[in-house]
Amino acid sequence: FNPEQTKKNSILYNVSRRSSRIQIVRQGCLIPVGQDVVSVSKNTTIISSTNAKLDIILDIQQDSVIGSSIWREGNSLNVGYIELCIRTDLTLDANSQTSVSFHEQKLFLTISLSQGFQVSEVN
Image (cartoon, one colour):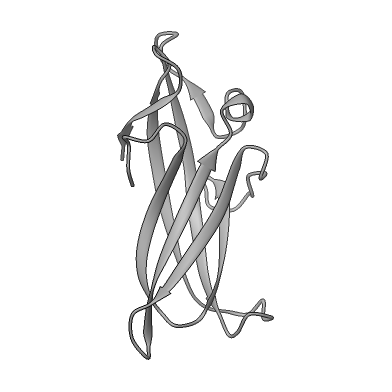
């Protein structure tokens, strides 16, 4: 995860060569977050006959995230927090909704608002 970028950040996984489905959900990893708040895209790079690198790119929509269900106000006007979960499912094939393996990654982002909208810390 790259806190140097202001809006788009990515997470890189080494996975088996299967189709994948990515979902951004609230902190409890159950309730989906709308694409109008955080949109997600992915790039897959094949590294061997059985493995691939999966790059998940998050695009935090600044105008929508503040005040959303994943936003929490900080102690000052210059800080806010985003708490979310990224659920990554590997599926049987591209047309399947059947998950054969999944990973849930909780993210806690500290957002500095003093000079725009900048990710200052990732936990």
